[in-house]
Amino acid sequence: MRTSIPMFLENLRKSETHQRQLLVVLTALVCVFHVVGIVMTSGLNGRMIQGDAASYFAYLPSIVLDRDLDLRNQFETLRVEPGDPQRPFGGTDTGAANPFPIGPAVLWLPGYLIGLAVDWMLAALGVSTRPVGYGTGAALGTAAWCILLAGLGADVTRRLVQQALGVEYALSSAVMIWLGTPTIYYTLIAPLYSHAIAWCAVSLMIWYAWLAARREPAWRIWAIVGLVSGLVLAIRLQDAPLLLIPVALLVVSTRSAPSGRENVRSYVAWTLGTVVGLLPQALTSLWLNGSLLPVSDAPLSIPTLSNLTAVLLSTGYQGWVSWTPIVLPSLLGLIVLTRRTDTWQVRVIAVAGLAAIVVMVAIDVMHPFGAGAAYGGRRYVSAAPVLTLGVGAILALPVGRSSPRWKLVLPALMLWNLWLLTSYERLTVFHGVYPTLREAARYAVGLGAP
Image (cartoon, rainbow, N blue to C red):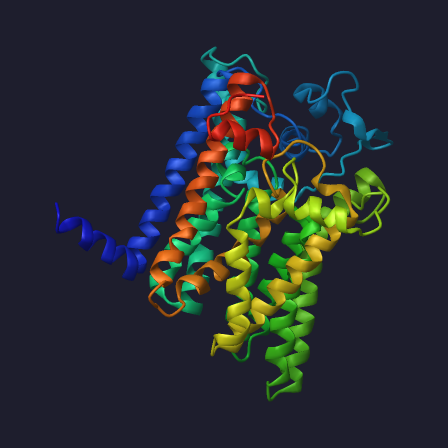
């Protein structure tokens, strides 16, 4: 046993096969814990789809069962809010308005269809009292499928770090960002929000852009990059700044390409692919809301230092850095990559990734996306692939006298996030409190429930 454990750890550090297998096991565990947790807290016939998840989920029974986009009966059945079955979004001539995007539902469709078959079986056995398409099978099938896609995002992110920095840093970086940020909350606890599926889409977008930037000719791959870029927008329009990464790779790669015709093909392929990927959301939004994009009419705030402090360091429901302190060494690692890497594609991803994060923070400062009870900096979950590269860069720094010691800060921050999440969920489930960071941290260190 003493020799097998070090051997296993060494294989895990150097073997891509072992790393992929561990991610499969981790994804399966997340899926099992989610299913068991939901059944234990909600019961087989309880409301498993709550909050904003209902607005994302409503598209599925509407398209599959009703074959339309009239969401009034979906909101009535889901009964997310008391009173108006159309939710607070109002109604239109074509049904209930829904500013939430259809992109997640498009990618969840296979899981929903599997869950729908389970719903029919449970209804035939007299086990389920929920309407078919809204019951246990549909909810858990869709959630499980989303978790599997999140596992795909984790593996693609791992492969990106492996190609950029080496296989020995790939798995540990991916796992630390998955478990050390709100990403774990939106895969384990709330997979039916848009965040986990956005992580998967962004990781694929960056991965294919990386491949396209390394090949010549590459216009066919840029068409795939464009298609995934459009899906990224169709899942979360707020993630538009992350498109800076494929755009930067496209611009830099074509500058050194010998063929002008090939460059034009690459730009056209990416643009058309993006339009096609965004088309389901654009048509849905036009039908339901009267506009091609679900743009909020909420007024923008004037950027202030207090708003910036709230977005980054609040102990309430915002506070990206205060909720997720592992992002600080990650951002430092991205800065290191802009200067120390010999691979220009990695340098471009690091620079464009930092720029995208700055823009995301600026938008967050001016727009109240972070309002309301939630676990941590949820709008930055989509940046997980970029943050993983940053953690990998820190792990890859040359080993010095103090290096091994201070690098232990990274797993310590990951473990803190897991313990904070446990405390958050205990307050939610057993005390009926959606805690702020201050309340969850106080409970985590044993100071009692608020």
